[in-house]
Length: 546
Length: 74
Image 1: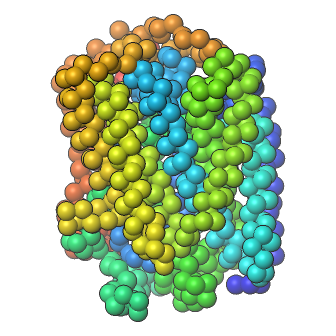
Image 2 (image 1 turned 120 degrees about the vertical axis):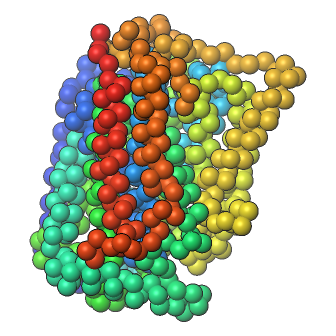
Image 3 (image 1 turned 135 degrees about the vertical axis):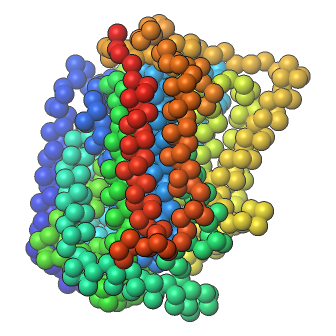
């Protein structure tokens, strides 16, 4: 694994070069009248129709999580890793219900981030700040997961693994990330939106070829499943229990369901997903996309099965073992051993670009949150749009630096845990954002305390969960009332209970409510024209359809 | 999701949409339905092909919901 395949490397480098050129050129795509508006840099002018949104949201949601982390989990533990497919199935009915309302109110009021919506809806600066800070915190480990994905590909390609020097080892990764940071800084959301087209062509090509070609090479699906089954039944030397199972066992059903549901509820309160939603041109675009995005879930399900394919190739198992049992190498190693060098290059490019696109969108989303809900709210209420955009550009760089910190600090053996940890945090903003779209029954202070309790409980539970060879933050499920449960769901229930009880108490003692700057019609608005620069509260939008 | 019917859609339409969406969610949320290996579809255990089939089914259910709720732009 330490020899570099020049053909594979050349193809990955060429793809990276092409994507970089597209990234820089994208600043001229759908040219903005004034790129120094946060609406333009951070939401690409809110002008994407169904077609572009499909690629953008697909590029946003299906990341190194899909291509590296999920198959790694399937490779190592079997059926338990398949919860990701259930998650990406149930996420779209959830999005279908609430995302159009969030889009409408953001459009009508000129909100760029969910933090601004929460501040405006509940009349609470503190709650807006809590949502923004949570969004930034939860996004960093998710970006870190993308870095781990790229690193896995580079390791299998033999780059950076021959030296003991940590800086030299990570240099290719840091250079690649620096280039992405540069064009994101320049072009904003236009860059990942345009690159998403290239990403998807490569991904669909790779998956179709892999599904048609690999089973034949490995003696058919029957052999793949039986090889996986044989491994999963073997006892793990460390624990004495089997590695996993080919079908979820009754004891694992509750964890499977809560991991899927928790991830699905969390996805569209993540800042990068709301950024993708807000960039849509019309309300309609979101529902159409909810019905069309499951095409990617099918891809996710098939990629998850790559984990079993990898298990059926002895050379892949040897490679994984030689690298300290790092299951995340299984998919890149599968490509290296099964495909001819040139196609392995294309498949590796798909993974790398598939990680760069969401990393860019996530850093933009975090930057928008920082600028609108923290910087402008706390320090510079009268910041001009140009100043906002300058601040957001710098913040997008800082997001990437923070993500590097997560990538270096936390255990990388199961990077899926980075996403699940982010999910625990981000789900605590669900009551303020999603329930807030429907009702102001909850008191703003009760929501803040509920959020704080959920965050504290979730972080504490994750902290004391060992796994993957480390004592803390090792896994994201823990026993709750005798069932292994995704911590995010337990924390959310606690959050809701605290918020509800305190709401009743606060109403009883007559604690003052916040001012709601939104109007009922805002939630159904579907304005035809793009909003102009927003510096003052915008007039109430005209409701569209009768 | 007890929503008043926006954009002039009848409660019956909203009811139908909520039922379809609930079906789409429960189909994979209720794990005991599909945590089994029989019946297999070719070499695929039930657990796998059941979930893979839910993907296009969810897409169809959502498309029906989209058509039910579609309104003309003014």
